[in-house]
Image (cartoon, rainbow, N blue to C red; front, side):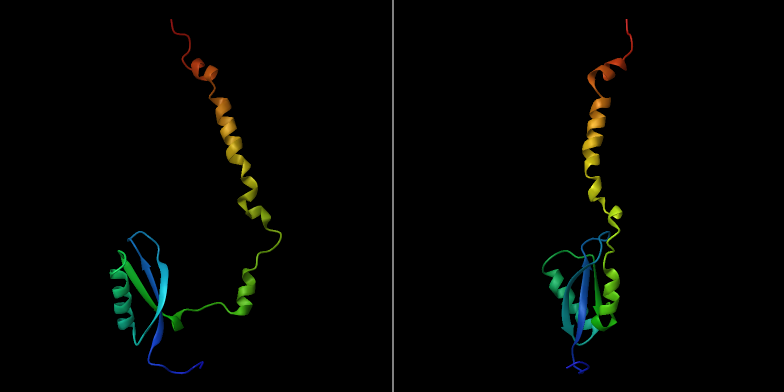
Length: 115
């Protein structure tokens, strides 16, 4: 089957809802050419949700990582200092500090002696 020529090509469809939003992959579709793939994608979206832009990409133009390249994505064991999970106490500590700074006596002392 690999390398077998068919009439249809596989396309990946990306869209974004507004001009400022990011593109998201929506689905794959089979079409004879790019123009027909765009028409099919538009027909699919126009019935469902507002869309600001649609991209159609032929799957053969998308490069994916092979098995050897995927090995480079494995996390190293000695990089825990990059994770923020150890800093969860800071929010509580900061809140405690703010509450100590703005106590009633300090706020009243800002007014000074008025006679």
